[in-house]
Image 1 (cartoon, one colour):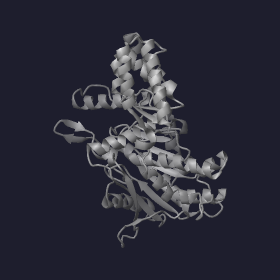
Image 2 (cartoon, rainbow, N blue to C red):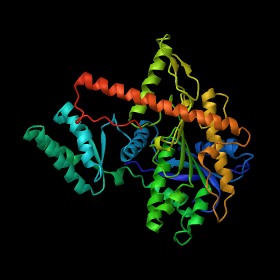
Image 3 (cartoon, one colour):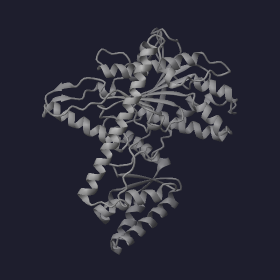
Image 4 (tube, rainbow, N blue to C red):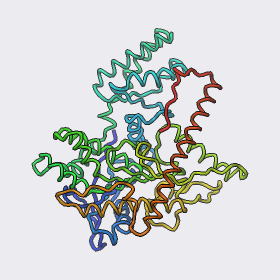
Length: 466
């Protein structure tokens, strides 16, 4: 079993002293912390990320503490990638964001969703592939393992009987289920997250004795921390928020108080491998349609983007007269993700096989670069402005909180505000057009599938695009 832990590196913004590893982040200091991708496995990588933040965000703005995470214990190569992806995928499943699951190797089951899973996932699989379809599944159960295992067996047996599978097939599947049920809390809720929460966010809501802080102080303290997350780091941010919510509830904060406190946490996420639109924080994401590395939800919008990207790459290399994919820079509101998007941040690179997506498209964490496309510059500029606005607001905090401004103000830089507002409004309109196009794509695909395969609406329910 893979065991991951984390360390917190503090960067020296002056460049005079070497970075140091700290035990925790003081609960009352203004700071910024980078939750990098799963490849930030050593001291040098983490320090480079923090250096980018210092050079491109903090310099000439505020000299505040500057931290970055290091992940220990993640295997290098394919094993490590599979481990991180499994955690990310299960988060999408838990948040009910995978409407069109392409990967049925892991089925997330809880008391709340078990009936839906069997109706919308298991039964269609059995109908299409027969009794052996279930032999490729692993059931990840969130709750009482014994009770949920019994429930899975009972529902499987009911389905096998309803679909007239033989007694021998039924017995074989019962044995298979017994051996392929895994505890979510044991295997897919990494323990390092609890430790990380205690080091970073818990001191923002409790005093030295562990008692809850007054609302105004908790709001002010939470507002003093700013998070930049990339790829897997966004998964970490969502999981820490979940722990923060649970702890605040345990401490006796009311739901309105919890929402007030959580809303003061700013997370700026680049190419996030996490569900969008689920956070109670000010979680603002920036994504590229040409990023083929990031974990996306299995839904119609993702299929729409993936198909257009792949078709355009084929056009560029093989079919030069084919239609070009037009994706204007856009923004999707909180309901659809609170996300800025562009088609591509960087130009394609030349390879022996033709034009291809380069390393920078997913991995480049800079806010200033000569290599950006024009759209990439737009994306980086908005992300940079939001982080700078967040930092300025953090250093203005006192015991009486100065609330985090709304997104419409966070995007401003004080110099080009009219242009930025006009650009943002245009991106909102482009976002609506994108959702309309994705909806039309989904309707056409559903009709084609139903006409081509004679599918029944009840047994093959196709759902939403967000």
